Length: 317
Image (cartoon, rainbow, N blue to C red; front, side, top):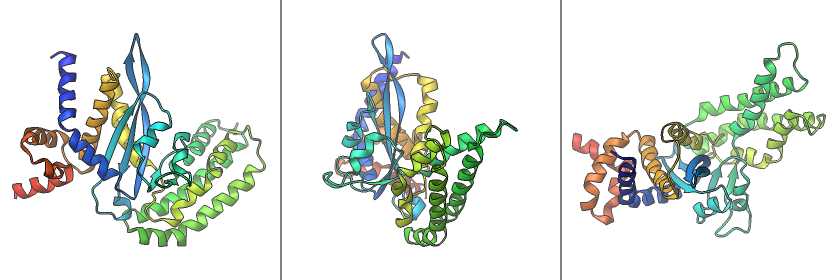
């Protein structure tokens, strides 16, 4: 089959299933907390490819004992301008877990309408900067720069926080908050004091100083999880959903057009949401495509992955 025929078939599926996509989108942004991230996607243009973006927002309440089903919604854009997340999150006022991308900054402003989004920073991003320095300098063997012990110490201190967080994953927000105040807060306070003391001794050009600045300049966002049991320590939930795109780029290489990017966003939303709910995407999509034209439009929520799973289990029984 020709590539254009296959592309048309995917486009037809995306159009038919767009109402399901809209329901998943509404479900994601009904959550009190979402994870946000983006990745590149090459897009075919005149004689070349340009760098588009696929954005994802993930709702997963399971880490704090939430019973609502997890879901991920994707959007496509031709560039990485800040107006794209503003459009995606125009009516949202909950918690956004994300990296330090400047395009999110206007979402956190107090005068935003309908209200400011609460920023929660990712400790994995902060740790990664120290880990790279510690790992690279450790290979020098006998030629370690002065910054190597500092990077290694930062990783050890952050890992102690991660160790406690693993123990409380899946507990209720209140239980997580109680443990954090008793055991994690002293660790966070200790690393902040240590980091500010050591930072004062370093040149602003030192790599480890830049890693410290990344966290210290955003310390309120990094420490916010100590006051809200719903907030996770990392933004790994969004990063996991983007892995499929990174793998896909090796297969399909690029989106053929902006329309292709938009179709990809719809299909990734459907497939990744099915996976998050432990459903075989192929089985679910095949069944939904066979039934959706005759399905009552007022009961489309019955075809959502988590509802479809329950119905299929009852039929099997």
